[in-house]
Length: 321
Image (cartoon, rainbow, N blue to C red):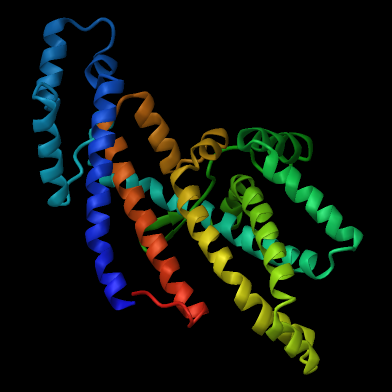
């Protein structure tokens, strides 16, 4: 395990390098930041002066090497649009995304796993058929359409939850969090539920299939024959053995929710990094886009590393050579 963990930094560095090249070149080919920022009324001299000020008048390889050297020093550059260090912008928006993703993950695990285990243990009951139908529908509805339905039902018709914005926050360790503020939590519920529905449906299906497979293994039948109480049977023998695929999907979904919460943050006007990315792409703010993709790639690597370690904790039979 230790050798596996120690090999990961080298693999991660290669992955980050490839990602930075692809994203940097892609942003150069797709759009021209000077044309977007200068406007239609700018003269050619104005555009040349702006390009020189931003360092965009140099060849692309030189721009990339300069950018890469700055990254190695911990400097991801300055935003073309905001005129602020990119890391400041990302870390300013990151808590908003992390807290709504955290609440969505809590909802997904708290509802999905119990419903999946119940469905796996009671395959012929009407409630199981209802759960199966609801999870299929919930997983099939497009995310943006689901968000609009939530706003229509809970904000327009029932008027119990706010539709947009972040609401009041409470400072904790230098971060502004809505999760610790009762009123701010109300603003979080709709975007978190919108992210959590698909996760609930996926966890339910995973837990159900895992339960149906594990329940007929020899060790489970032997445990039942010994007269072990159902709560202990489920908690100690069943749950631990179905958690490995759940941990895998949860790790992937966690990274996906952080990286691609753009639609939810846009619909609910949630000021997270997903909305920052969308604005940066629209306005050709290249340093923000490249830094975002590199940091998200690093986050995926770290999340999957943690998931690999959890595998070995859950199942001692797993070994890495």
